[in-house]
Length: 108
Image 1 (cartoon, rainbow, N blue to C red):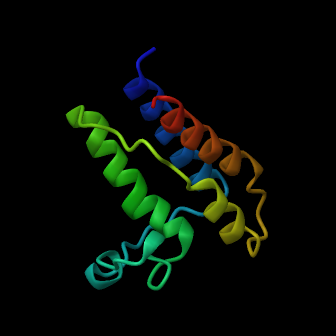
Image 2: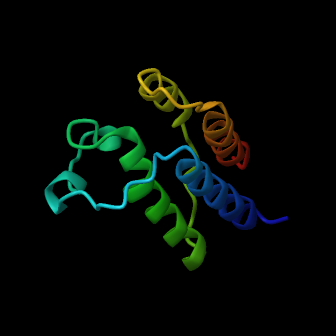
Image 3: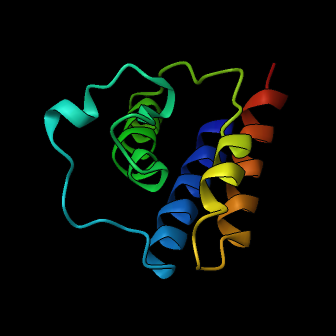
């Protein structure tokens, strides 16, 4: 299985898990919020919104266009920290994010 296919499957699973845990936002953040240059847009977005509106969108574009994928992923530590305040079960989402990090770090 190609890395692109594996990435695509993980992106679909992350999206599904965000939705199943009611962490999917139907309202897009403002253009200003999305334009933040702070890592994970932490100054303007909730981490789950960053996942949905920045990470998933950009990664899907890379896969569709068969562009080079990032080689050093470290989303999981941020996800662990960001999810501490949530009351929903984020174990599956964290596992998917960790799998994503490991997949792209392994391809080096």
